[in-house]
Image (cartoon, rainbow, N blue to C red; front, side):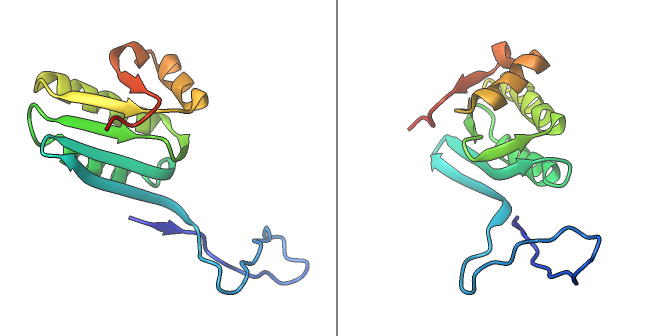
Length: 137
């Protein structure tokens, strides 16, 4: 799922905020993307890119749920390229941890950002998660 920056030009004096134009030929930057793939026979990667908010949480939740369908496997949620994370996204991760524990699977959260790690501390779940700074090989 990709969400793209929408380009618009507003009339002079418009009350709407101005959106800077993109140089011709420059790629449009995605606001959100979701990378899903198998790293090996028993490890599935879910790596969101951009903001995890009310608009993108359903796609994130669906991707994580799909990764959880194999009991005893390992799921890696890589937050390296996440710029914002809502409480809903933290809930998706907390629920995934519970599901993995129930099926004897392993959930690893890659989170190099101290700002995002602090959210897990505030939510009181950091001690229940395997949080690492670098994606395991």
